Length: 186
Image 1: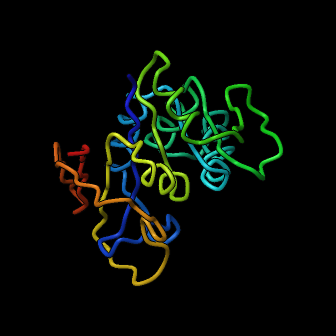
Image 2: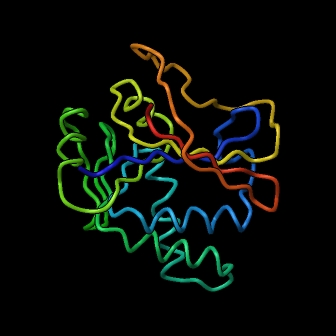
């Protein structure tokens, strides 16, 4: 069965608002390597609209971009499928992307049973719902050495049936002071 890996950038004070800080080159390389582990992305509408068309546009027209941005963009567009869970998104332009409006739990269980690589999950709202359903297999938090003092926090409004116990299985310290922490359910 495929794993669902949730990854997100966070400030040292738990802010997950991407506009509050900028990941460094090493962090982007780290996420590019993560993308290679998966062949399916799961997003809610907001995250999907942040990622697409931004990264596909860079892959099509890399002029003026950094080597790391180009590599990330090319890896991003090589994914087999993007599944967007949304009640409001009307349509998508990309043939690899499909909108799902049906039962979240049933669809995730079905996706996990399909053959393929890992399933990569991003954003905040959709992952919060999957946390409540206990359907996330791994958590990958990249903590940046900055305190922003404001902004959305991870798992705001999440209502867990019981504490979610995690086991640290890997960590990596970046030159810029950030750290990646990989956890599995305990």
